[in-house]
Length: 302
Image (tube, rainbow, N blue to C red):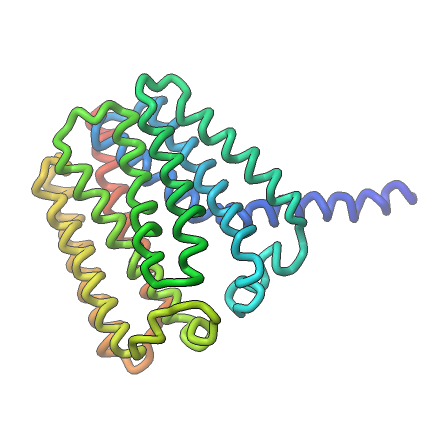
């Protein structure tokens, strides 16, 4: 009886550690990043291959590693924000040692996968560059200057390029440049919506922020400009050989138009802006760009 009673908290501890590990890894974001690398791989190979899945797995583990290290680096700042104070490290649900061991395991796994069966060292080198830009530049700089968004944006542009280089990179370089710009531009409204959604909390943080220079209404107008630029880049992608069928081309066109109209309504016409809805719409629009292209290449390959 005592053994059964003791097994319950042990079982609960295991589940709690798994949950904390997933939170440290920002698992949903990491899956999205991995899919973007596979998207870059497919743009060059035109058909799914096992090597692309290995590369995407490597990018997934690398993103988890970067997120884990970011949680370690930001644990003191996270404790000051209502939005982030419930993360595992500020709550002391895990130790620094636990998070560090997780980081080293993830980063070794990531670079092992990024070098497995690939003739070129570029995917691994780009992965290392991502780690340097995100954890070595963006994370420490964001506590000091708004220009931290530059290395942060550059880092977010690299996953599709990692997939592209892993598959050979024989297609037009213009394609991957446009794709990288799409992911770079997408990141800016993605981040700003989070800040606007938590306006009071973000404006009180002891780090440089856009709220120090712009009003909330001004940020809305700037946000709409970035979203419009993102939509235009999606449309541009339909003219450079990425899309293989008219059906998918029309999906992307409707997606771009719906994005602009949705944000115009949500930001300027509605009495109260639902930032959570806009955040979901923005992320779905990027997913609706990648999924149709992904599906048509699978169908063509079959």
